Structure formats: C-alpha cells, structure tokens
Image (cartoon, rainbow, N blue to C red; front, side, top):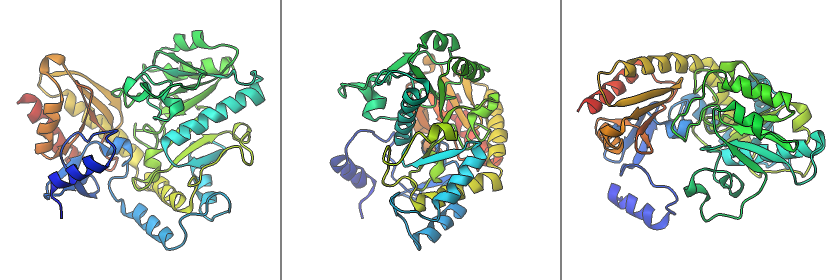
Length: 401
C-alpha cells in the first residue's frame, strides 16, 4: 500500500490539477464531525466539504437508507417511473413551500436548469422577444463552473481561456439593491443571487437586502432566483437562508447537503405555473431523480427535522461567534456569518492565514483558507458545544502564538 506521499504523487500524476488540496493530508476515514488520515491522526472537520456534510460524515440513518436502496434499484433514468422520486419530491416541496421540483445531480447542473427555466418563462409568460432575455447576477458570485456560468464569473481562474461565452447576463455589485433597480430593463427576466456569498469569503449582506430585492423583482415582473446550494438545509440557522427575512423566491436552487454527504444531488424548486413550462423533452438529466439519490435525499431531509439540526446550527453558530469574539488577540479584523457558516478575517498586518491553517491542522482542526486573509468555519450541523470548545481553544492558541 502506498504511503501518503505516494498517494499524492499518484494523484498529481494521473488526475487533472484543476484544483489542489490545501494540505498534504490523505483523509481515509470519516465519522460524524471527525476525519482520520492515513497515519491515524484525527481531525475535527470545521469545513464540511463546502457545506455538503451538514449531517457529518456517514450519518447512520442516511447510510442505512442508501444501503436499503442499493439492494433494490439504483437507476431507472426518467424514461421510467421509480418508487422513490414521488416521495422525495413531495417531501422537499412540502418543507420548502413550493409546488414542484426538478431533481438534478450537481449544483452547477441545477443552476443551468434554473437559468433555462427563467429564460423560458421570460419568452412564454413575460413576452420578451426570443433570444433577448437578460439575467442579472452579482459580482464575485460563485454559481458553478460550466461554460455559461463561467461567462458571468468575476474570478479570472474560472473565466479566462474559456470563451466565447453566452450573452444575456449583466453583473451588478452584491448587497446593493439600488444597483439592481437601475439594471432592470424590459427584457430582464431574473435576478440570480446567493443569500450569502460563501465562496467570496462568507459575505453577508445588510439586513433587509433580500426583502428589498424581493420587492424590486416583484414590482418589475422579474423572477428572483436564490442559489441556496451552500446556505440551504439548515446551514445558516434557518432551514433556508431566505427565511431570515421572511421572503420567498420564485425559484430556489438546492444542492450539496441535499445528497447527505454521500452522493451528488441537487434540485430546482418553483411554483407550478413556472415549473410546468418544462414539458416532455425540453430538459433532461440521465441521473437526475434516480431512486438511489432520492432515497438518500429523502432520508437527509428527515434527519434535519428529527435531530433538530436547524436549531443546533443557530445555537452553535451564535455560541461560536460569541466565543471567537471574546478572544484577546489583535489579529482579527472581522467576524461574520450566520449559523454555522462563519468567516474569521485576519488583519493583513498579521500575515497570510495559510500558516495559521497549517498550525491548526497540527492541532487536529481542519479548516479552509479563503484567499490570503480569511479562515472559513463551517462544521457539520451535528457539532456539539464541547467539540466547538476544542476547536475554539485551538484557534485561540494559534492566533495568540
């Protein structure tokens, strides 16, 4: 068996280097909030694979649902009916308040699905001239990395060398409702936005921003599409981040945690009058809505309610924010976030955060750096106060060293 260096070398030789792991650590086991590397070192996972592991690693109820389904059938495609798509669809619609769902696989695929749906709505319902529909997005967004989405990214790593791109997108500043109002034209069909810009460093908009955005979209007959791929399913201390402001989007996009941390699953939700624009043959996904994914996602949704994960995310998030705010260090520029989606931004005078993340790794705390100054903190929603205390102790030790 290869050692860690051998495994890393093999991966870097044969696997495309479109992304590079932050640390030379080979994770081989996971259980709840803990992971273990090849040498048997344990780490508290404060990253959760970009908020995908809301339930922790290998949650027993979700694993059991998957094992049951593996013994029955895993894929029918949408060419035939299966007995798991209906129950999952009903479940996710009931908890979200939408009429219909279109299950997909990845978050990127779901965003593409929402874009197509909004454009179709613009032509069929709003009366926009064919091929003239425009969607407004925000600067510094992250909605995926397909060719269409890359075209309206602010990150050159995602967009450079991949053009020509699809037209029909306009970028405005995030957290600026006035900019949205000014950008809307007669051919604007939708505004696509994240309630919190997670990949830009956990950028939380001012209170009331989403409510104002909702009013502007309604007033101008523009669909509000919320990308809750990272913020949804309890991460921010509410089941969906839009609930913090008491609004409802026209189209909701879910992913990541929907697959229970086991397999890729995503979904687009909308009212019947919008979703019914998708008719036979107008959109598809070979693996979308497969019985294995539906069984896992249905179990994941049940776990959220049965184990009170939304409330735990709220309570533990408030506790984590409070405890970090008490640290007697002059290195922190800002603490921000909601629920268990937090950012610890370090002053530039304190240097790059990567050495801090490396020190935390040696203490057994697994975190992710975002850029040069920000440490991202997003543990599984099952985390306890005692486990957080252990992580906080490590963070405080590293910042004071």
